[in-house]
Image (tube, rainbow, N blue to C red; front, side):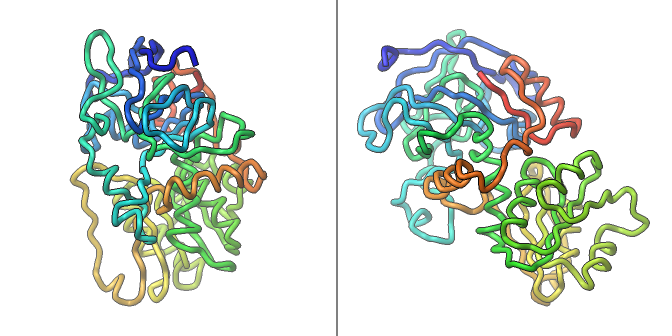
Length: 375
């Protein structure tokens, strides 16, 4: 392309300081260096993790920064030593990369990449960023920074997807959908005929519901304080929904009663310490599995009686569904193209980049499932 090797000027949502609104700015995006690709972002989702970063509630975020990590786009140009990508390829950025060389990548039980984690936060592998604005260096976020019309990724932080893939809601596979769905089929390994309880029916929670249904669960109980989410949850596979504030009993007591001793699998998709504890105590004491998905704030701790695990319960955590990103994402996109699941029902709002602050307000108020920003 004619822009290859040149600095590109484009729009981006810049966060100059923590707890400040996004500012739509013209930024300069440098060409990709060795083993890097520059990508034109087509759409990107608003995720609660971006909110944690925005409010200073996440480690290793340096301001000013361009946030965003759930996106999809088209490769504009590639740097030296890039083997698997070419201009025009459709890709999903990966906030958890995969090098296939480190001990973690080689271990089938892990989806973290030590090479990815070993980089200095906010910069590329060479210690510099690819963004500048008003003469200042703008830091990058989780190796992705998708709140920009163009971004630069290390080749280990991108997954090439099918050429026929429509570039819109498929960006959800870059975070929320894979996080929820993967926690079911990969982390928990939900068995057919089992009972499941999903705490939180946002974008991740609804992806859990879809995963549980496709895994053959016989009973899927959705739990949320926002009852307007129940209809959508039932459309996607929830067999019943509960609003805790309407119950005379605690949610733990109610679930134990409804399932005759505890749920087979519980999923916490909110990041609330009290809800995490409820999820653990709601699982069957002898064989229940609880998967913690939601991200809690910094310095938060959870306390429970160790006997809760000694009797046979299993407690797991799951980031990005526990899946190996470059391997799993293209397969999931192919399943989406084959209409094995519907991402459209996970999207409640579509906005332009200029309305990003409005999108975050919708999320904070609990009025959105997932908001997609388009460029």
